[in-house]
Image 1 (tube, rainbow, N blue to C red):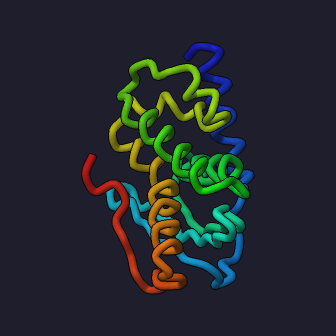
Image 2: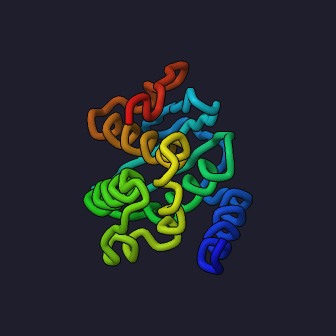
Length: 164
């Protein structure tokens, strides 16, 4: 393992322990529950949108260090941002995760900040699903919020990343 890969591995482990944005689900806004059936990772995520911004975001979940680090990094990237920026960041992250280990644009990596440390995960198809779990929950929760379906996910379960 080269020095950069080692640094990225350390960052992923630190983020998975930090769990930025994790907490008690307060019941406001729209939510999404996602499960990765290949490994058992799961997350429930809630958003509150106001004035075209992601006003509040909280998540509760469990899983491998990749899924937990990705959620933590996602929170740091999108919390408080306008929805257009959030949608663009989700698209950037998805592009990176589906690159299958191929180089992606440096500008895209810059926009993703620490989340770009997950780029190496794109070489491992089953691990991509772990990294995308929280982003899929975010995308669905925002769609529900925009459709006025706040709180509709309680008791529902969606399967993240069923196809690749």
